[in-house]
Length: 248
Image (cartoon, rainbow, N blue to C red; front, side, top):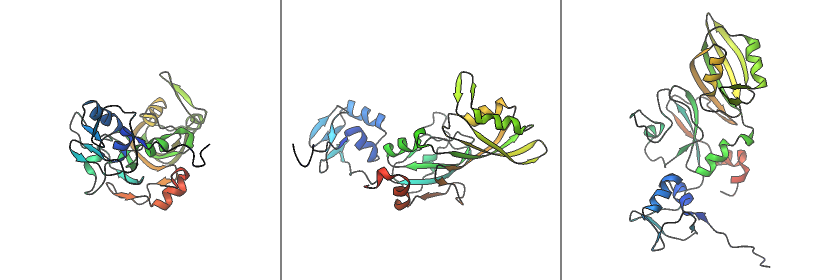
């Protein structure tokens, strides 16, 4: 048996291109199918091809730089901005708002068009998927303004979870912070963050969400970030929160 163990296989070509900021994995596979990717002077068309350190990858005639280390940013998403790279209706997107010099990034989860607050962005698709895993046990915490009659007992019942239109929602922590007339501010915390989950659950309680702000995603906080502002998470903090990346 070899003392050094099996030789490393490197990254699959689609993952390499995604980490290098060339394209998403899906788009990278399309580039491969179209014959636009060359590895060490050989055209590549199979996504199971591996890229090793020192290999030369060329896309559309341009050499691709090796991927950067995994990086993470906190971004204060304004409302009215889409969390998507392309919008068929031509609405502004988060990625249109990135400052000059930013690498290609992907979002960790999403915030819908009318939601605002903390959105995590990373240059590493694998890191994004890791941060989205419910197994992390990380809470997503929101400040939610609602219109309607808030019943504390109804909010407390959400801790048992509920099923709406055949969709099962995990337990939700919701508390009343303040109330003025028919408007109130709530703090809502949940683990999964399904599409439009808070709005649907509040509608079930006859409450209309008029503002929704994410203030925390696991250990990462919105803090004092201004609307539209972006700030990179220091590498030391990233390593402390994600031990799997200590060697990055």
